[in-house]
Amino acid sequence: MDNNLLGFAYKYPFSKEAKEVVEQNGNSINVKYLSSSAKHIENAITNGLDYKEISINSIKLDYLMTYLYSRMILSAIKRVDLIKLYSNAESKRSSDALVSSDNSEIIKIAAQLNIKLTEPFYRKRDFNEISELAISFTDYVANAPNKPKFELVNQKLSGGMVIINKNDIVRVIEHAIAKEISKGLPIKSSELPKEVIEYSKTLRFRVATIKTESKPGKKSEAWIEKLLQTPIADVRHRTVNMILAPYLVNTKGLEVEQATKIINDYIEKCKELDPNTKITERYIEYQCNYAKKRGLKPLSIERAKELLGSAIEIEENSGR
Image (cartoon, rainbow, N blue to C red; front, side, top):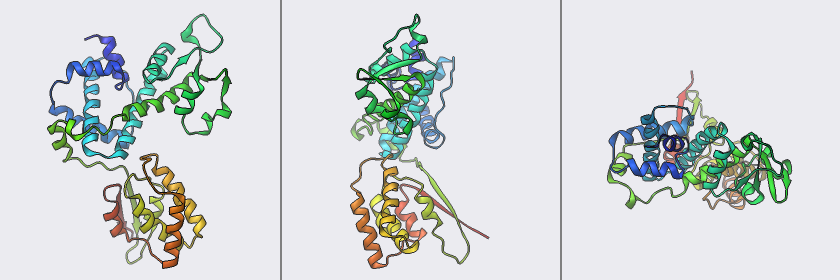
């Protein structure tokens, strides 16, 4: 196998080169990759993934196969929140590899993501020494991170192009990589090997755990405050109706307008895991008004564990 091809594929497992390598080595299900992929996913969603330069080809190939199996396992589980977190972790790893690459490699990866990069409107003797690249306005807007630093008002614009330094363009590409990795996921069950589907049934991943302490004999809603800091991808309607709205307007005594804003901000964070929701600010306001009118109380922590069991884990420790 071409070492250069494998090395490139190892850095960018979503690339055309990676698909070529996998097609040469993924003819049958290998049990060892099922196990390693489960650990890989767990590490990705809890700690993120670090890019490490290695010279051993067998390890590079194992990583590529683990990436392939991870996509199949995530598809079998059908957890959009896990897919989102995993895609972000893999894209961050690849962007870390991209930072230390030359401009030619950055442009090559961008092209595979349908992003056209060019050198700015000035030239230097060595193209790879150019510290800035130009990206079209359209591609920039579609992929720039939602952070103040990347707002258009803070960028250098020229002739319909955004002129941006190397490190920042990599962050823009990182967002495009995440979209590329999550593309086509989840894979249809009919297209997944039976071994993968059966193995996935033995797995249980948690996106987050809420740990809270309560004193014996004393009711505490501290876990709800922590829930408001922990986005979820599932059961969001009932979380709003049965926990957040009653808690904010009746337990905390907030005005409906204040409670609505807090919950709406929370839902916006949840949409980063899974944007598919019919919860609107108007709906939230209605639920807050309804909870206030009826004097509703939030679910107990025991009932909340049942409701949120598939989305988040709540651990309650008794204080002394």
